[in-house]
Structures are given as C-alpha cells and as structure tokens.
Image (cartoon, rainbow, N blue to C red):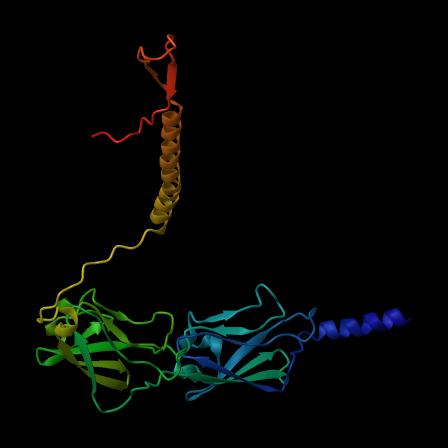
Length: 325
C-alpha cells in the first residue's frame, strides 16, 4: 500500500512538469561589454519534463518581450536544454550596454518564474580628460600611446585611433588609411580587452603630431614628439688614465725568489765543501808517509888506513822532501 502511495505522488509530480528551483527570487549578475554571461534556470527535480518555457526581457525601453523573438539577440543567444532537458539556462554572448535589465525564466506555470537582474559594465576611458597628453618618442624606436578602460574586462563595441594629417584626422587603427603607418601600429595587449593602448614601431620624424583614442562618445587626445636618440657620452678623467708628466725613475722589476733553486744549490754544494778539505788533508798525509818510507842506499868505502878491509854498508835515511835550491 505504501509503495502505491509513493508511486501516486511521483506521478502527480511528474505530471505537473518542471518546477523551477529558486523561484520567486531575484538573482544579480554582472557582465562586461564584449563578453558573455549565463543566466541560470533549471528544474528543481532532475526527472521533470518541460513542456514549454520562455525567456522575457524588461529594460532599455522594452517591457517583457520574448528574447527569442527579438532580432537584437540574433546569433547571440544559446540554450542548454538540448543536451540537458532540465537545464533551461540562457547564454548571451557579445554583451552590449542595451542588454542590461531584468530577465525572467518562465515555464508553463505562469506563477512560477526566476528573475535575474543583469548589469552590463562598459568601457569608461581612464584618461578621459579634455587636456592633451604629451608623449615623447625617439627615432628608430617604439612608443606607446596609453589608452584603457577602467574595467579591463570590458571590451568597447568600437575602438578607433586617429591621426591628424593634411588638415584632417584620418584613421590608423583598425583601418590603416595612412600609408606610412601600415604594418607599424597595433594594440599593445591583445589579451586584455580593456587595454586599448597603441604601439607604434620604427618611429620617424614624420610620425610626430596629434593623435586621439576614440571609444564613442569618449575621446583622449595625445601630442607625440619625435626626437633623435640621445648619445651617451662617457666622461673619462685623463689624470687617472694618462701617466704623469713628471720624470720618475722606475725601479727594475724584482724577480721573485725561487726558494727551491736555492735549496738545490745548498744541498749540492754543502757536501762538496765538507769533502774537499778532507781530500786535501788525506793527500798530504799520504805524501808524508811515502817520503818517510823511501830509503836511499849510499855505498861508501873506508880509507886504506883502517884495519878492516871489508866495505861497510851504511844506511842513511834521507828526507826526500828537502827543499830544492
């Protein structure tokens, strides 16, 4: 019995169609010109079936008109219910200031709606002043003329850079109507929609003059001066680099002492100094020994007056080192 009651209530809910989640509540969403925004709307129950639904817009002088019947949204509106039937969210791309206002998501139950307050922030130029901004560049180099929106995510619907030549202003970006500016001008930062600064490369003296950045109806004016690139002079004191005029005798450079060379000489000579006197003394002692051992035999004879007739050998030791005269 209980199972039958659950089935009965489920059939009642299923037959009632899509009951919107967060109904009767106003959601605030902020978008930026040139960007995209998703307005959420979905069924509360994932098994709900959607018979009919619509999106209505109120604002910009319009009173609750169907979005899908307004030609101003042509090519800029996308629904998600094809891939997910319960997802009734609306995607609006390439936002414009005119898209700001109230949106309502409504199903076949007229009393159940989702209301969204969409605010679209546009491009307000930061340098939006009546005074002309002076900019200086140098020949052969690049220069940037600064121009940007207060909201860097906001992309202006139209941006133009103009240059004053031949007594009139001519467009140089995005349409390069002046020959000498072709292939030399571009926006500085392509990734930030609100950065509209102009980059000019390979400056020449002919590029000087008046420019302005235009985001209708706002205008920022510039005056560009082109000067020759300054040369950097390096001042060098001659007193520190040139030799003094006074005559001075320079001492000859001293050779560094080679300690190992002196050590080698000392080791080689010192033993010789000890050995030479020893050799000289040894030689002298050897000569004295030879002199003392030399024997001179002298044969003499006695006179006939003696009684002995035999000759007597007399042996004398003679010093052979006697000084010669």
